[in-house]
Length: 59
Image 1 (spheres, helix red, strand yellow):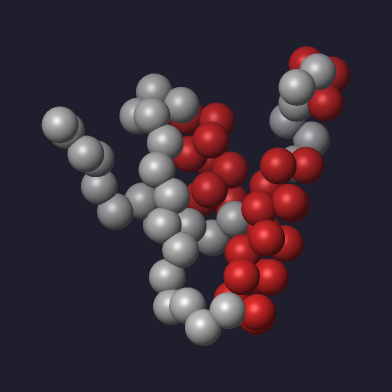
Image 2 (tube, helix red, strand yellow; image 1 turned 90 degrees about the horizontal axis):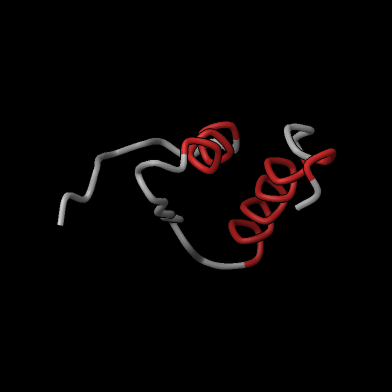
């Protein structure tokens, strides 16, 4: 991604739209995502899109 486009909320907005689409078009109850524990940017995007951190996979 071009650095000038970072931190403008594009990824968060796209994820919110995608999550809404999945819940409205599929019969699912849960969406799960994983990130590298060092990737705080992706974790923040997930949190802003409504995801809840449940734990850390150690191995």
